[in-house]
Image (tube, rainbow, N blue to C red; front, side, top):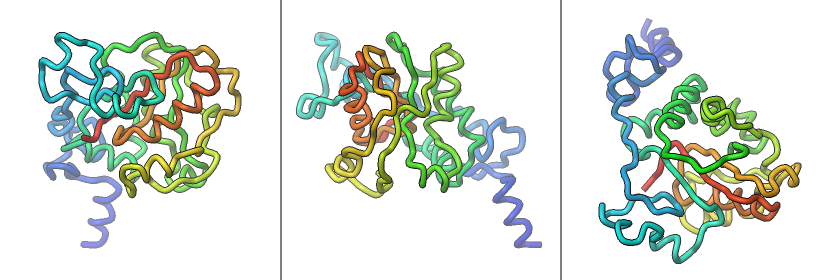
Length: 240
């Protein structure tokens, strides 16, 4: 009976994967309602380019366009990046369950939380999820960025383009790398099937976590090279 119980708990868990409290009554798989309500939204002020929180609450009082040191040293290819929550605590655990267990059912509520809590977006013509290579897609069974993008597309009545931007080669998981190795890993890894579709358009790129921004930056470079007018990167969480 012990092995059967463990198997059933893996498929239909009875406790929260973050706090281990009983999950009965929660609207979300693997995460109890209390832990879900503990998701932390990034506080202002934020860098107007990459969305990184400033340490001082007075950072943008006199200079609202002041960028963080990283963006001044190495300007990003996207025009703006926004993240909704901190990649820590129960939100980090929920994202890990979503991607690596993997638990596809967590995607829609996480996407809805992102859509509800994102700061005001500028005009957007097309929403594009960061693509997985076909080999990774077969392994996981779904593209987490595409699932996160659905609620935002529906709520704002914005076209969702899921097949134009694609990976031309497999890459190592970025989580295994750091710094410049992340940049090298995704260099030249993306392309567009229909470049004309993005010309002069305002594009919203969607991904799950912003760590160094290397993947989003490479996608933005491809879009800009095709003539995209404005590229905003939006992620569910920000790793600091």
